[in-house]
Length: 63
Image 1: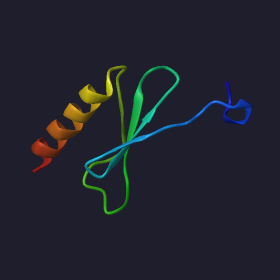
Image 2 (image 1 turned 90 degrees about the vertical axis):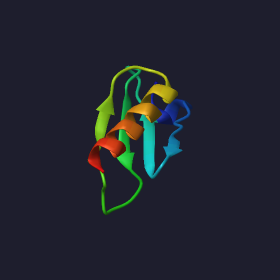
Image 3 (image 1 turned 30 degrees about the horizontal axis):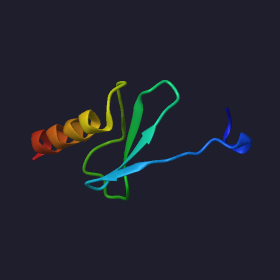
């Protein structure tokens, strides 16, 4: 289903990142703005809480 046919597109904002759900149940995670502390990445199919935990882990590992 395309956006033009009425499907809604929603995102989650968390700690300076935008989490975008994909149709294959994965997540695209992108920084909200530059400069980027972490490059955009794709998270495997999981819950939004698991993706948030992955972001926390990456931010801790980068510090």
